[in-house]
Image (cartoon, rainbow, N blue to C red; front, side, top):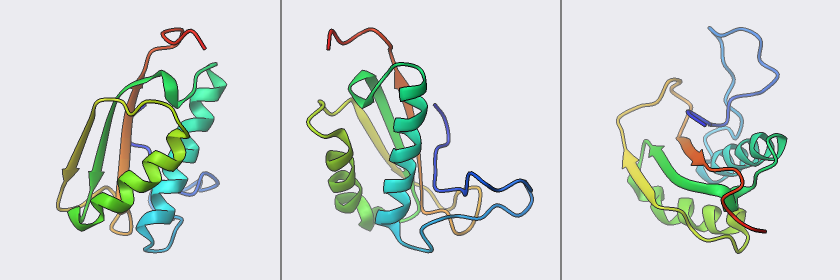
Length: 110
């Protein structure tokens, strides 16, 4: 799953994307993880099936907030191999975090 962030799922105009979480890094990260979990669930998977994760952020000072939210969202599942990258900007100026995951469905026996 590529480029998951806090875009408003109800937005219909690609040229005026609304970012939820209004400048709040924690909230945007929570929204992105919720979206990831929803898509995984639609395919019979969970965050426990994620084998690789990459986070793109616009301010590395948010690293501990990111990993705190990640731990909450993993809810006991093992942390997958992870890359955390600071970049100058994302697709929309209000976007503070974007997460990419790779999952292998059926890998975990649970």
